[in-house]
Structure formats: structure tokens, C-alpha cells
Image (cartoon, rainbow, N blue to C red):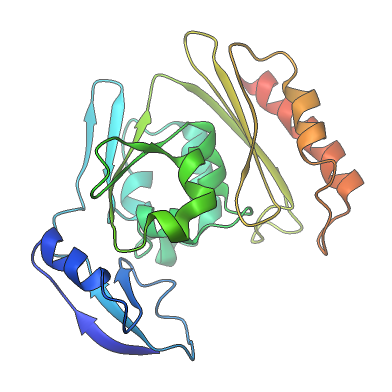
Length: 249
């Protein structure tokens, strides 16, 4: 339940509000999560006046402001097709027009197609009061601690990377039971991220070459059983999807 609404004009004002211990104060981007019914009283800090909605390409870098919506990112001309496919899988058209990039990553669990692909791309996250960008892979397991009283201001990905995404789901409208994304740099560096299970996507491989990607996928999901699929099924499918990604590259 939202008990307070604030709309600061500067990042400093926003951080002052977010730094309060009482009431629980959270940033509000598109509102797709915070507007859901909840018994817990929260104060919200609306970010729309902070100028964090810019999207620009600089060379091989795509710099995405924290409050850029999924739909705006989807419409970026240089977006890799596999990333566009993951965004379409993440949310419906109506939700994509509201959901922000930062909000989606902060709220993502292991079944988020967008988070899986961004993890494979080794997306870098700029956070207030932290001088260097933080890799998404290092941030995801510690989101609650790292972002307390702070804001994500920008997410950056490299565009000169080959990318593939594959998934298996019960229906076209469902989040994946298993999904895999592989990014490969001109140097040969290869990252494999898996999704479909747990509180965050899994980085299964980050190495100088692609050999062993399928084996890494099988191993990474060998214990990942839940109500949606057994560990045996998920492990086998993860290997198949990793091979498909490599073929697509």
C-alpha cells in the first residue's frame, strides 16, 4: 500500500528520500511492480523528472537511462535481434510501455528473459555513489543491499557482440522453463547465461572461447528442479538450448 508519493526534481533529493529508514521508501519507475496490491505500507519516489530516460548509442556502446522503457529500448535501431526477442518475451506491449529498464532488472527473477540476455551481454550498471560501473552479474545476487538508499542511473551494453537466445516454455505467453543466451565478443570471449529457475539468472560460462558451452549448461542446471520441471529435464534442455545458440552464432 502506497502511503506517500514524492516527485523530486534532482537526484540528490531522491537519494535523501530513499535514505530514510521509515517509512520504507522505494524508487518508482514505470510502476508495474509497486502498483500491485500489497499490505506493506511504502513511500514511493517518482523518478520521471530526473532526466534518466535517455537512450543513445556512442560507437559500440548503447547507453540506456534507468527510466527508459522496455518498449523504447525495443525500438532502438541498433538493438541485436536476440535482445529484441527477449524483451518481447519479457512483457506484453502495454506493460513494455510502462516497465523501465532498471525496474525490470531490479525485480527480475531467474525466469526473466531480459535479465538472462543482459547477463550474457555482461551489462554494466551505473549506481549513484559508486564511482565505477558494476557488472550486472555482481549486482543481481546483492540487489537489496547494494541498492538500499541508492539509484541505478544507467545501464550500458556493447553492441559489437554476437548474441543468440533460445527458450522453452509451456505456452507462448509463459515465462521460460529453461532459456539460454550466449554472447560472443570479437576476441572470442563467450558468456552463457541460463534462465528459468531461482531468484536470478545463472552465469554458466565466461571464457576465452565457446568450447564446452553445452557441457557447462548441463552442469549448471543439474540441480535446478522445482514445481515447473525436474532437474534432469532442465539440465538436458539447457544443454540443447546452448547448442542451438552456438549454431545460431
